[in-house]
Amino acid sequence: MATENDMSGFSNQTEEERDQKTGQFICWAKDICSLLRAKGHWADLIDPSSGLPYIGQQGSTAYSETDDAITLLGYKILELGCCRAVYHHTLKTKVLVGTVLTLAPLD
Image (cartoon, rainbow, N blue to C red; front, side):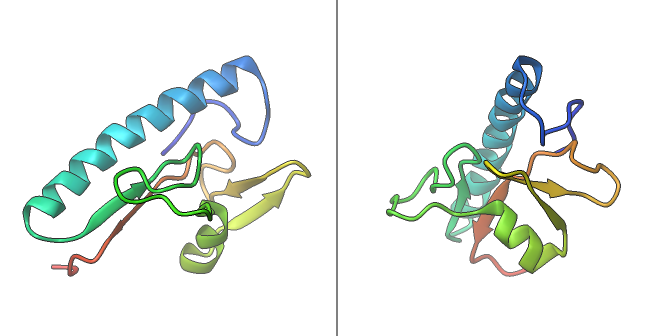
């Protein structure tokens, strides 16, 4: 999800936008999951704030969007010391990554 602010930085403005975009993603992803579940498919979303499942049972291990961004999508990851940031080829670090998981077929 594109952002106005550089998500690799820390400021009040960045935090406010991160919270806003996270809320938008969760609303969108819940709708997608509801549609998929209504068709009989398992689906869940990962809360970008915690790395934990939003709908299903939460385990003790957090999911890392940055790890899968490298593995599945080929994005670069910036190591920032305290955390990591996704580097998108056109959006640079003005991006918030969200994940929806499902067992639904591609069609």
